[in-house]
Length: 570
Image 1 (cartoon, one colour):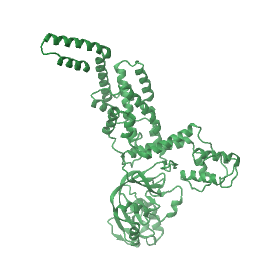
Image 2 (spheres, rainbow, N blue to C red):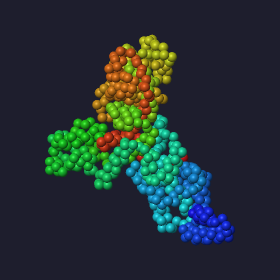
Image 3 (cartoon, helix red, strand yellow):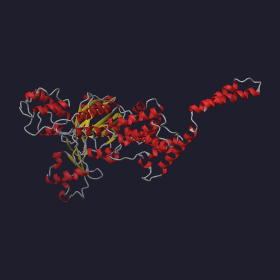
Image 4 (cartoon, rainbow, N blue to C red):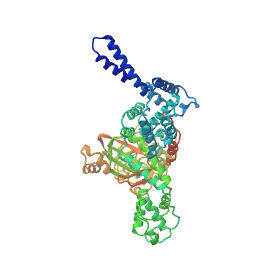
């Protein structure tokens, strides 16, 4: 009707000042013409229907706010409160009248599968059915339209929330979790509104929820392994002698086919006749071992065979869970940080969003697991002392102290009371000391016996966990490196110190001089650096090589259950 009014104004202005009857006549003629056209363009009752749709939407939103009856259709929605806020901010104006926007959302929902999410969580089948009814003009009542509106908006808000923060609740999976962003209802609603108003809903969401190159590599790897699954997966290899160089065995063609499917071997046809492990096949086995944290000796023994026979579905699941874990953290990261992947037994320095350095690490044993959390790496200590945690002192060291009179002297430990006064161990009646009445502090002096080695990297936290050197160098040669009490032992700690202190003006020579002095020296970083302790059982390198790690702490099943289960966003 705005067009009709606009034309009336033009006609009135063009009328001569004299001849009032002529003015009125022209106005009436124009009104008749344009209202006749309006009757064709806007059928009778459209405005009333729009008001009716808006009122039905308002009533439906109020049910979201105030009804918890499971029989109510609103009970099927996951983001009830956010949806109510969304429409209240819009004064209950419909959001999905544009069919192109609806179909764009349907495409985005379908593509959630590529991220390891389930499109069924976002009402895909119902949305497709209702959209087909709209296009066939079979969705007639205002109540039906309001229900369709809410389903579409619930899908959008739920998907934004999951893509930005993850679907599984990280805190319920890890009680130590401390770096999940605020769920940010304002952020979610802003992303939703922006997506609706910009030209491409999909492009808008990708811009508003950036995850970077690493996430894209994970997603590509998931697609590749799903393609392998759809092509029949890979064959299982029967048990038998280890596949060492020179072995002739009927199973060799199966081994070659298995390695070729995952790209560890370039082609397998020649082994159908050869049936012998040659240098090329040995190298393919070694590549597979490196990708699965196995001893890379090129011999496919029992451990390697077990990894080869893991079904493709399990590898797909590991990638899917890693994508979920990535969503927990990637949205709020800067470009420079340190990360420890506990499951991979590796630590990385990321500079300008690229891995600049990495090293092997030792993590906590299954009984004393390294926690996952985020903190800031603040300072480095050269020639550190080690204050033994109470649990270790009473459970592990007290029996040794009782059995070995020279324990303190041999191990370079000082004995302190609770206020820090040094005590003479020979004056203590150790036979009467128990875990219950142990009121002492054990402090190991700097030196070659010190459990922390020559350097420790501090990010003060309630778990007393940090990165440090170790005199037990032989442990880094083990494929599974879960040996510590929870702290993280670093294979190349001086290299890490050199990287972290470069902005302080410290080089390797100065670091080695500080260590050679024998004095305990503390150096604060010029700028604290974020450090993340994560647990990811899959990884993709910059060149697209997919790595899988053993679920050493058995955390994957709980994440999978949460990712596949019901959810509510509040």
